[in-house]
Length: 81
Image 1 (cartoon, rainbow, N blue to C red):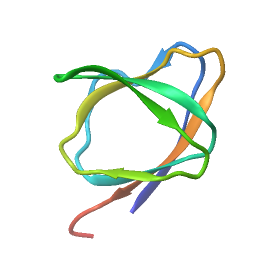
Image 2 (cartoon, rainbow, N blue to C red):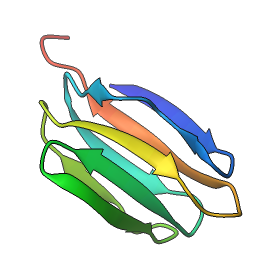
Image 3 (spheres, rainbow, N blue to C red):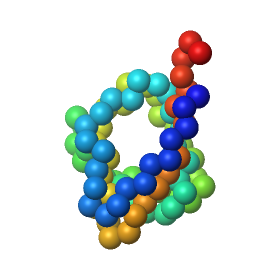
Image 4 (cartoon, one colour):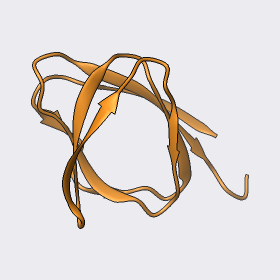
């Protein structure tokens, strides 16, 4: 596993990226993220402690368009290790 805490200041973004591994996200703040993908733009609410998972291959840009910082812990499930 690889565990990373991500904190996004207001009006910051990840840049477009592709997830190489299945992963779990555990929000450590409440907030709303903007998700930009090939399917369009959507919003994703972060609820403190309400985890969710995604499969490898997800491609997107994640942005905090809000006025408060948001944070989550990402747990990547590394294969072959």
